[in-house]
Image (tube, rainbow, N blue to C red):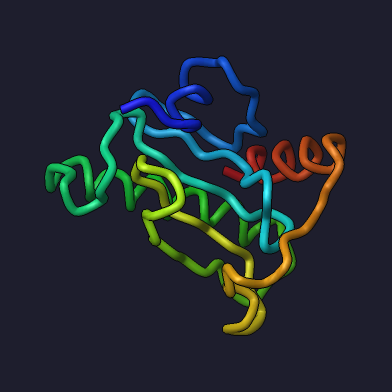
Length: 130
């Protein structure tokens, strides 16, 4: 099952990388709800998060926690909200969204438009905090 995330993992599509290890990748969402909105994905191509092995599932959340702490350290927000929807791309992913109110994590809301230099600056700032 090849998705846009598979192409990002293969280096065919660029991304603003936040963190990476042997199993997972975190990068900025190109249509963010807020500055610092990050996607965390497993490198293993698996569509449904609950189809992951228990070990991989737990490791994904520990990696996401590390990334969320970096976001919180560098992006002004009350908390980093978490969403797993799983319908928009058939590859498991966790949304980490800096929020100050419940309405800040409304996926029906208009998305931000950030230029590439701003995205790169945000990615670098969060990455350094991890």
